[in-house]
Image 1: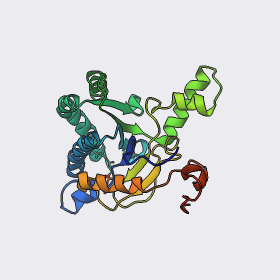
Image 2: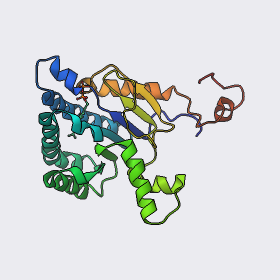
Image 3: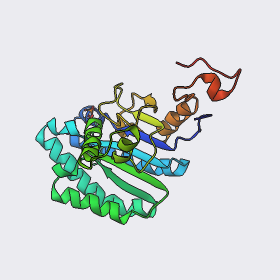
Image 4: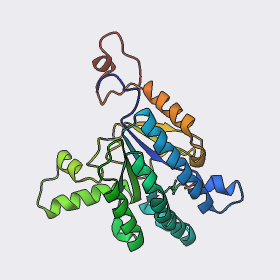
Length: 243
Ligand code: FPP
């Protein structure tokens, strides 16, 4: 709650722009998602290198089911293939994988792949990678409330927090969205209450280590107040006028 940390502990990313990246090259949209996996691999590595401890990415939203069937099945296949291919490397880099989302709508193949990736990497401690898949912020709040109601527990901020899908990590410090849109799109509605937001026109497949460094450098300049005054946060005479 005091001075900003130069390196955010937890970064969350809306990886937007894969489709446009592919369309501009006269490629099918799924080719953009494949390129997006490459960008994600590099991003995970760079996060680990600079000392980010948690990376949460939005890979498939509850609303993405409305996309053309071939794109939906392409993304499902990509997840299964990426898991099988990337897990050994992630394992050797000390990455712990968590899946966040509604698994009930996913195929058995995908669910097994997710469970395997989580089990294999469970003891890793360098970086937590949360992959939000079939996820929506409203879904998360509703499922947490339903679980508390089923157990007859009172609904409070604390109990909801503990029942949410990201209860295993602190809230994100920095939420990045690529692709030029400036909205949250049902991502981390609860957990992002005090996150710093960073938007870039870069399309996700173009988001490289330098782009991540630029986002982190921008974050380092922010004054995080959590509802307090500038003077409370920085001490008398140091307050900057930040809305
Ligand atoms: C949004 O771009 C991106 C997605 C819906 C999928 C994100 C998935 C990846 C980056 C691949 C990694 C995922 C796995 C399987 C681990 P868009 O398609 O909405 O792009 P557009 O706005 O240009 O159309």
